[in-house]
Image (cartoon, rainbow, N blue to C red; front, side, top):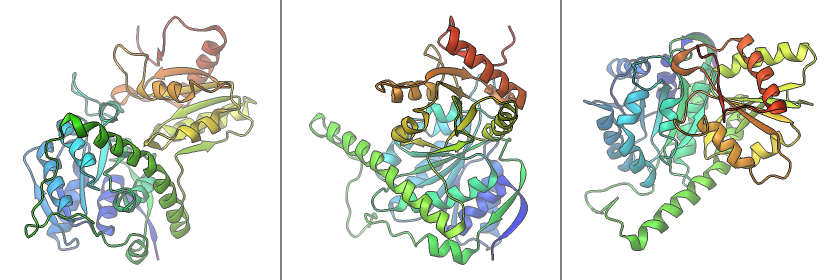
Length: 391
């Protein structure tokens, strides 16, 4: 029977990988994800996890080792953060193009310079177009559940794509939370053994990822895009199956107190829980405010977004990354693009906040909503607003 215990979220991520019978872990330490791979190293060293643990000299090498391991049919896991994710950048494209279902936990952290070890979403937004399925979580339980789901999603023969699980650095990774770790037998029933349909075999040598001339390159990239699009249906299917097996169901955009809401706030990651408290307070004051939590970042849930905002007057989007020289934050840009062709759509107001780990309090979210409604009524001189900056 599954038991609920107080556990550091990073440790729980390692336990989730162990429960998933991972075969290979390739890792390089970087704050704030180091506890994840340290724990996995301990599990392997103690004989609790029968897996190959590959310590490497950089994140670029970590992902390169994952490519080889996954290509021969091993269930493969790694973790990284911030500059480490960007050092992997060129290899990330190879993993998705070669249809290798690697699972990676990303402890989201601000990018340099200046050096910051605290969390925001600048690292993931710099890697948004690498072709991976990308899922955001807001607490430890969601992290554990979605690591397990990630293996089943990525390894599904209709998908065969790598998956990133994004958890906020420090705000989640280093926090002890009550988490229910599923029983191993229940995970085994939910997650079948990995049988990669196209494993490399020295007895049958093939060339993979070879030169693609202009004659074929466009068709290859289009096939990759269609595959990622279609993967959304499988993600939803697996989430539903997980819900039936474990009692916790996930969706691409989760709604909180949106009934009758004329103003919607959209968030991603751990700050969503603070936003929920702010929404409760504003609802108690008679304000028609609700919350949308964007969980599935790639493939982007266009239809679900359009459906959830169709009756709102104002949609306020919080980005925890800034698109320099652009219209504000990457999430707000995508939301605007998704709703552009809709005849009836809310006024969209973009905020950038929480950069470099700066907190946004419950009162801060309420202030953001009030300012967003004011901008929707009267406009603003800027394309977006940055929250909490000192002038």
